[in-house]
Image (cartoon, rainbow, N blue to C red; front, side, top):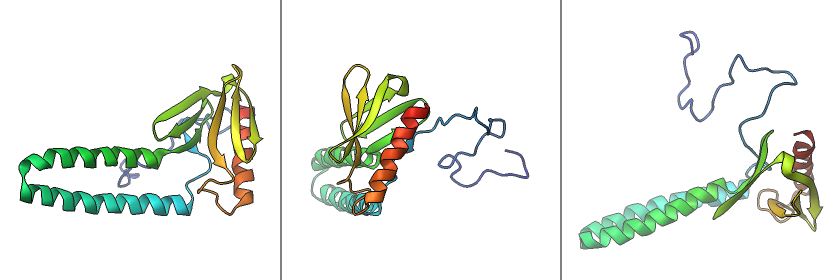
Length: 169
């Protein structure tokens, strides 16, 4: 960036658009977008779990150091395991861009190109993606999802958004 436009603090979290990138019909969405966005209940649960893990981590490490240094290693391994699971929980969701669809779960990810998708349908209150090979991927877009709880319009909007991504990509 130039001197008259300094980089904002934490610029890597909010990348600025490239001024040379096209802004017309030739523009492509490269960054993955979560559909639907995290709901307030999910954010509350994840933030609470993050705070709880931080408190437990400090307490457990101080207790382990106070009793035995040998106890520090298994306690640290257990905390690291919970940390990895919590970080992965923050990424759970259905993501799209112009090239692909990615359904991230706690222990795995299904990523497919839009060219391989036959259709996106509502299967008993959950959005299902059917591949040309016949394989079916269940997305996180569901009437019972904590991201869109108590919002029938939220489910319909997320379903239609995913269908539009599939049609136009």
